[in-house]
Each structure stands twice: as structure tokens, then as C-alpha cells.
Length: 342
View 1: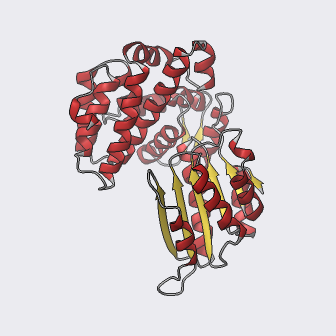
View 2: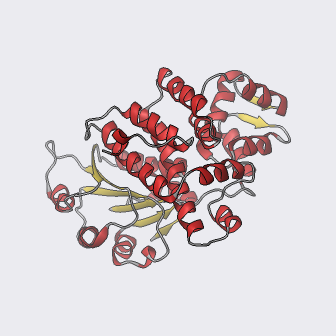
């Protein structure tokens, strides 16, 4: 079955299917949809959670092996299958379809992946999930609906936004839902429940002295190499997780690689920026980065992102923060050092 994210909570209150696919490129909504499935599984006795990270060389036989294995204590289990791509390949497609044909009674499978392309929605493995469970496609909140979304989230937190507050926060966050939620949480911590005025929001933003990952990305895009490096080191000193910094940098690098390749192919910039939902305020920063770097550079930077991800997980012998410095400086216009490509 196909489920909208807005209907997921109501669905899970009544039933729990053996398979769920959560797909999309909006991190906050994907995380919240996955958390909803995890909580529903726990409440129904699936106390053991196991994770399979699908990367290069992944053995798809693990999926069937994990499904068929018995828990040490006989618990029901939640099995998470995390894919870095929405294209699992021939072997992966068959493994997923085979699993869905005979899903174990004591296991809930949660599949997480980036946004499905249109042709993938018609593939046999997606149809198999649709038949055995549910497909939840997460869509970004567009600019027109963002103020209403912010207003709802603020009210859920006990905050009552005055006129203009939601629009101001939408402009500051430029459509980044995770940034919106962080600002809402900060407002609540600063002043507690109650009405929030535009003056209070502006003051909270102005008084924020800490570096954040979104500011880091924009500073690097603008070509301020030295300042972006200071910001990155500030994030490290504050105890920010390497994975969060990598997520922000990799997301931007992937977009730059796609834009650069499309521009090389002769596509129009305005149409590309609209398709990638790049707000007018950010376009000059993105354009600067595209002028500085070639498609080859951004693809090398994506390879560096993958290496950094492995280093964070302990699967590569490298300092993740050094790789993040290399990636940040590359985004700011500095050449990638040789060590970053080995």
C-alpha cells in the first residue's frame, strides 16, 4: 500500500505491516517517519533492532540470513535495511522481492533510502514491498506551505507565533526543516511556552554565537576558506557529531555534482535551480561554487564523502575531521590534497 507521511501515525495506531519502505531526500521527515515505525514496532514487542548498511560489496544473502535467524532470547525483531542509493541493483532487487514474498512473522523490515526515481516506483521490488507492506514517500515542504508547517510545529511545542514569525523563520531556514526545528527548540529553551514575536525571533537569532552546520556550508560555498575552516573547528570543539557535519556537506556536494553535470550538458540554470529547490537568496552562493569547481572536482568530493563516512564508522583508517576539513576547503575553492583521494 501507498502511505502519505501525514497518514503514517494513524495507520500505525491500528496495524503494523511486515515491511515498510521510507524514501525521500528530506532528512527530518525521513527520520520522523522511521522513528514512528520503530516506536510502533517496539510497542508491539519487537524489542530487538538490527541494522544492515548496504554499501559497495554488500552481501545480499545477509538479508535472508537475518530474516531466518532466531533471536537469542526469542524476541520479535525490527530489521533495518539502509541503502545509500534508491537503486539496489539486480541482486538487491531480487533479494528484497524474495523477502517480501515470504516475510517472517516475527520480523518487521524497515527499508530506508533516498528518493525513488519515477522509473524505480514501477520496479518489481517496489511493487513487492507495496504488496507485502507500505511505501512511504517523503516529499519536501514547498515554500508556499512552509510557514503553515512552521506554525504547526511551533504550536506543538507550546509556542504561539505572532504575525510574520513563521514567514521570518521560513526565510532564515531557506526551506531546511531540520534548521526550522532547531530554531523552534532554541526559542522554547530561551523563553518557554507562549507567544513569540518577530522581535523575539530576531533577537534569538542575533544572540546565537555558536557555529552551525548550515552556516558552515554557506560560508564554504561563498569561498571564505579560512572562515569556514574556523567554523568547522568550532563545531568540533562544541562536540558536534562528525556524521551531522558530513551529512550537510555531502548533501551540498551531491547537489553541486548534479548541477555541474547538468550545466555541462547544456541545461538552463534557472530551470535547474528551480528543480533543485534552491531559494533565490542562496543562488549566488551556489553559482559561485559552480564557477570555481568542475564536475570532476565535485565527483572527487563525493568520493571523499564516502571515504569520510567509512572513517566515521571505523571502516577506514583516516581521521574523519581531517577529511571534513579537506571537503570544506574544496567546497570553498581550494584544491583537494592528494591524501584526500587515496
